[in-house]
Amino acid sequence: MLLSRLAPWLTPLPFFRTAAMSTLASPERPASFVASLGAPPLHLFTANTPNGQKTNILLEELRLAYPDKKEVGYDYVRVNLAKNEQKTPDFLKVNPNGRIPALLDTNVNPPKGHRVFESASILLWLVENYDTEFKLSFSDPLLRSEALSWIFFTHGGVGPMFGQAGHFLHAPEKIPYAIKRYTDEMRRLLSVFEDHLAPGRTYLVDDRFSVADINAITWVKGASRAGIELDKEFPAVNGWIERSFARKGVQNGVGLLAEPAHAL
Ligand SMILES: N[C@@H](CCC(=O)N[C@@H](CS)C(=O)NCC(=O)O)C(=O)O
Image (cartoon, rainbow, N blue to C red; front, side, top):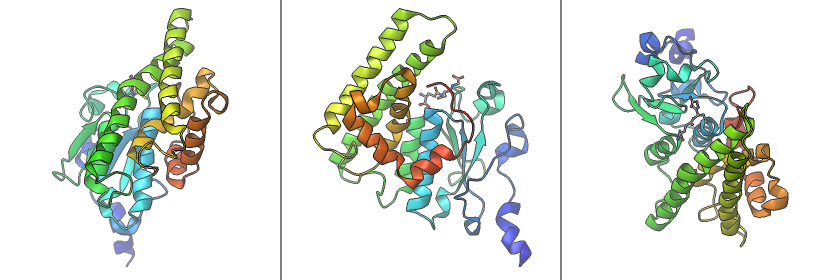
């Protein structure tokens, strides 16, 4: 009896813990972990940054949407960016680009698993494989295409530009030209979201919370760290962020890594 209750915890650790990941921290299980479903097949490598948080959020939203689904069980490894753990040979096996987040999915090709890197690619992998009832994604081809447009817009524009703004705002050498260039670009990108949402849209696609929102909200919320007051300058965006962050899955995902957020 005791042994069967402990069984999920006694399951042999996936290959990456045995030797390959020895320089990284041990995996942790989130509060949402369901012991009766067995050892979690998804292993997330993350940190408390906008790109890390978005993957945490989607996994928590999936856990809530599919409480009985073994395939969406996950654990996570905190990658210490300050110690450059993301550049170690162990980490580079899951992301050759040496940046968080990364995912190892042992639902596929067990026990070795399948690696996925780049935050938006991880989100799409997860919804395409495990959001089988389209609770956070879209079956309709036009809505799916609209969601992909917002995902690419965010991944190619918002993440990199907001990231550069954060870099130059916190750099030891203050370069006014660079700070202006990237904070101006932040405002331009925010105005694209604002114009889309202002006619009364509640979320980016089809007025329902989806992977397209999850991909963007952690970056957009961080705009305040660049001195942008969303409620004053971008009221529709501000409403979207407030609605999104009121969700349990979003709060659980953001709360997962209780350590100070890194700069933008
Ligand atoms: N395009 C990548 C960007 C990933 C990225 O920049 N991650 C940052 C944290 S938000 C990181 O790992 N920084 C540490 C480094 O660059 O070494 C994605 O969306 O996953």
